[in-house]
Length: 206
Image 1 (cartoon, rainbow, N blue to C red):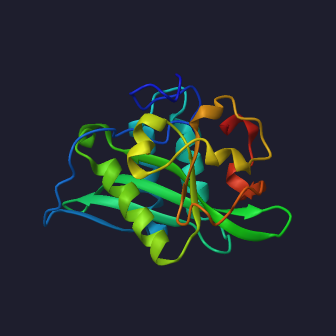
Image 2: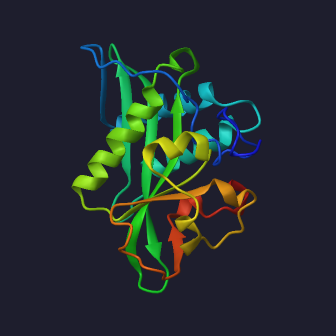
């Protein structure tokens, strides 16, 4: 599926970051977003197994679980949405590094999933917005994503500037590679060659 289409499923697991594309998230005493904990691993796997189709569900679930235990520095940001104490959504933001300078230059949004029975309620959007808010508090300069521009454009991700951020893998759908900069002038015109954490170093994900 072309990442420019409206629905949230693509051919490969990593490109299928968004599964709850529309709707309004209503904050209520029973629905909350919190940081994920190691004990949430089983529930997070189930969310991704439930949200994706047979061709990609296991790859995404394995990726989410691996990222939850990835010992990177800085560490990944994992958030879960709960309804009445039950986890119904999950998002991960993992660090990206400048291969030349060996320093963190941003975070990658992936994967994102919402349980099928809770989709179309804006929970995915709420998870993304809360993650971006927390990263802004940490003065993170850039957040990148590989997904549907029609969906991620609402969070100020854009395609053209993302061409400066080069992954070590060829992208099968380059128009899906997007960036959101805290300071759009901060990187000027320099090209940043990226490295990612170990669970994402598989060309099949891209």
